[in-house]
View (cartoon, rainbow, N blue to C red):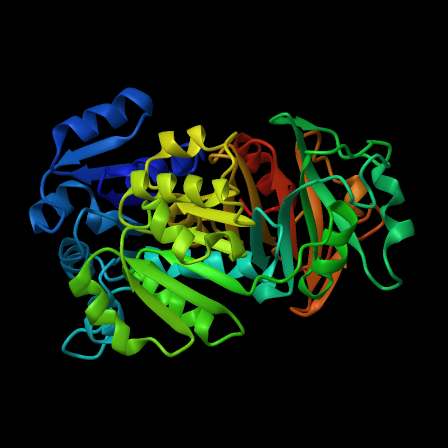
Length: 457
């Protein structure tokens, strides 16, 4: 596949690194910053074009007339939108993905999407803020989870959880799971990380406290599995949000429609005045700085179930989250843009570090991978879980899962058949055409092998 990436920033660079590892992809990155392009070339073997991404000549120099896919993730919404429209004039057959951050553009994306003849010019708009909001929503629905990733339109989820004392399975073997689950409930552990190292997931492995467990189950059965692995956490009710930007504002609007009690703290007085009329009485909007310990104590931070820091400053998010945790807030989630900060938070008291870049990249990868419905990079992008669709001529059709030459580091978690039938993966399950297969790989270098086995390349 010939792919053009507009923008060599964090998202564009990481996307290029991901996609470049797949031999069938030819990547060209466009940016007007030579230093960014040079830095990228020092790390990976891709083509680069220096110039403004929205200029027709730049797009032609990048090979837009022959590309299969163009991903616009440059520094501004306007450049992304204009570049996609010009690219459509050059090559209407190419798939065009456009990142927009502004809510105004998102609200009128249908208007931006069509030309004077009513034809679509942009195949997909991606809003990082909305993706992050949805990501946080799912975490709040699953108390105790570090990640909650949906598959098959939400029928299944991959849950990441750290085991704690009090979990029924801590100190027991994986094969004992079935003895504790109610009849009709099934699950599969696809990965275990102990002290940041992957360990086997065969039935004789004993689960220990502080293991990071990746398991797949039907969404309606998640709570039962959570009880097995850690002490049950009560549903979250009292939420404090630091930051009234697009993410904080939209999150508050979403949560107030449910049974949450929400407080939103914003230090920009004019921003607070702008959003307050659009919040219901279920949300208390407060003017102040979330890094101020007195303000947090005055608002009874110690009684909050969850503190979510989503300001536009990583430093403010980290500091306010550490303060919240020091005041015994049950769960703390922190929005972090700089990847080096995410690494620093791994062994801290902060429960969940949220990376908008990784969430955005996950959404884009689903468009790029042929025969793939969902893709989620995990553990800083080293590991990955994906939802593959078995094609008609797949060599896997008619074979049991234990007959497939997958090897170490690859785990099939589940199969979705006929769109609604969820089958947890066991060795005797036979693959059929159009099955959606959920596969976990401990290293994304194994993806090529996975795709070969299931015939998606």
